[in-house]
Amino acid sequence: MKRLNPFFLAGTFLLMSFLDLQAQDKAVSSGVPFLLIGPDARSGGVADASTGLTADATSLHANAAKILFGAPAGLSLSYTPWMRQLVNDADFGYISAYRHMNAREALGMSVRYLSLGTIEFRDNSGSLLQNYKANEFSIDGSYARKLGEHFSMGLTGRFIHSDLGSGNYNGLEQQAASAAAADIAVYYDRDIEQGTYDKRIAWGISLSNIGTKLQYTGNEKTFLPMNLRLGGGYSFYADPDNRLTLLLDINKLMVPTPPRYNADGSIAAGKDPDRSVASALLGSLFDAPGGFREELSEFSLAAGMEYSYYQQVFFRAGYFYEDPQKGNRQHFAIGAGLKVKDLSFDFSYLVPTGSRFTLKKTAKFSLGYTFGKKEDTVQR
Image: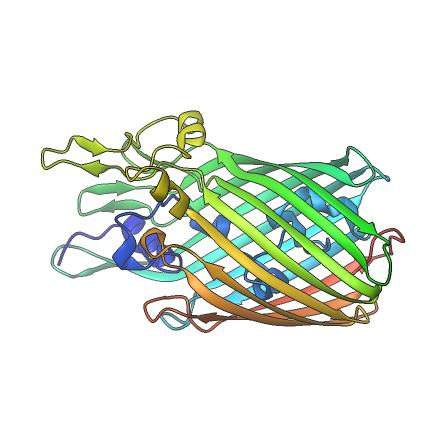
């Protein structure tokens, strides 16, 4: 039996939900990829093209600047049975809340927790050393401020803890890893009265998980999943209660692209991935060994739509695409929501389009509550 360590086992287990295993040699990867998982059912129903959705408590994941365009306060709870086609004890949960402090400022908080279930650790002879319950979590605090009637900015601080195993296994010392990170985001949201059909235009940009590296063992350090997200939404409606919203998000992981190596271990093309966070962030748009074409292939696309009927019943659909050589995540998503007064329930389901895609039969559930209404913003 080959040597197994917690980082390899748990990290590979989680990574399988993101990457086609036959494409990992060219895929851009990082530590704690659970931070990139769309945690709620509403976003899940539009294939995570969530930037242009109207604001609620779950907006803190994609763009914290959005919360100033929602109700005065909101709370959301989300749950996902994780990778149940492989294991029966992995779960992903998310809780988020925000509150307007005044007309121009708001505060938010969120906690996400991923349980990877029980992982067996064995020695070289195959004997069981122990069963380890691996888990990862993050705790966020956000601040948003309006810079104009329709424009806002958001800042988020984040503490991250990843416990994939600890102790000495086959001569390799393992430990849990922690890191600190920050997000910065801007957002624009405006309703325009124009003729028979009024419209709403929204767009946002966020750069997330900018922070320290993770260290699980020895001197090896792993980048956080620093991510650039650009997205927007366009709604049109004959009355404010019934509207169709079209959505598009573009994402790019801002960490080093693996270079191509010669037989002697020297770099044949690309750049050395062992560099500082600042260097990786600034150089991640220009370091692909295949040049500009490969750099473009590292952008993933998510497109979706949401139709609201009297702001009480919601229907959603979307499609996510990632290049086959850069992870090969490709799937349809469907979802629905129901709102009764201030209480909402959302459901989504992922439908993979590739036979090798690992994350199958994934359902997400969210429960939300809004406190009060904001007259100049259409609430969901």
